[in-house]
Length: 255
Image (tube, rainbow, N blue to C red; front, side, top):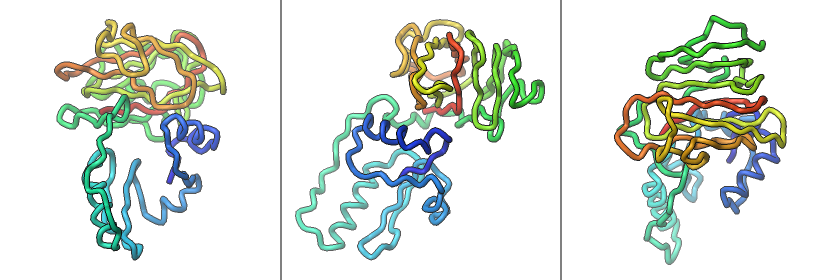
């Protein structure tokens, strides 16, 4: 069941493209009206609900992880329902990129929205007009879990949009992984960007969507893994610069 968090996730073309990219071969129901979401009083992406043969909810889990436990619950309920020859071995999955579970011990930065409807930690909040273009100057020092803009941006309800080449975002974070939900404002556009850590090249801390020089391209509305640190985790200053106009940035996530 797919319930959109952002507006572009209601676009069926986007849903079809991403299910194919992920190799999903089973049917996916699209709940853009939040009717199933509301019926379950759900509040989480992702959320797992497992019902038995009589339709009773026997297990639930919110958020990533606990995949082995979920599989064992399914096996148990299949046996309870009289299924024969249930394979009790657990599936061995090779996780890649965003699929790798978060490092919860090192994670101290929360999901952070850039649209003003749900934003938090914005250093320039209250200093500039909303829904209008504005030339920002990024703060030289940011507290942990704060972010700021540089260059010409429009901060709207759902996202922050860049209006000129060289627009940047800085974020002071503490996590192994830094991911960014973003996309081009115009369908089919390709916007190059560059990321740094503490003002230097990301090198071996680059995520799956950038190279060691921190360079990548925004081609569609998606979650981009920009940082995956291999060593000890400390407070770091992340910056991303969009080299062309027209990026829309929705949300930072961390892992």
